[in-house]
Amino acid sequence: MSKTRRKVIGSVCKSKDAGKPDYIKIREDVVLKKNQSLRLESKKFQMESLEGATAQGKVSAELSEKIRDRIDKIPDWVRFEIVALETQE
Image (cartoon, rainbow, N blue to C red; front, top):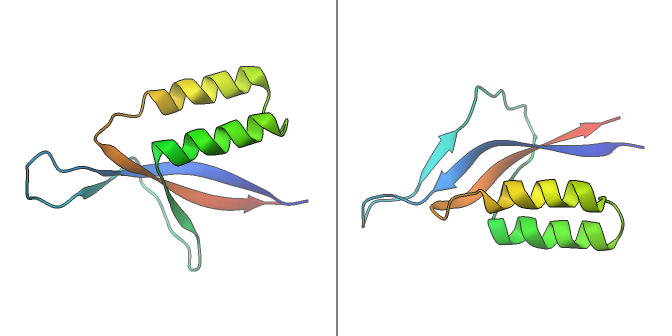
């Protein structure tokens, strides 16, 4: 059974100056492969996804709390997190 692993590689950030475009900040060196999927996940999407996984029993209450703490620490000026999806066998 293959499992999809998600790794946050960067963020789409709101510009500090009015009238300027948003920008992308990459957290570390990454190598993207052809046809590799990247997802933009908002704070709201991550919370809804976590609540669904917790309700279905896919995530324990203890792990859910740790993930919730991480999501809560995302600053308001971060519009999306850039997530690389990796399939593991």
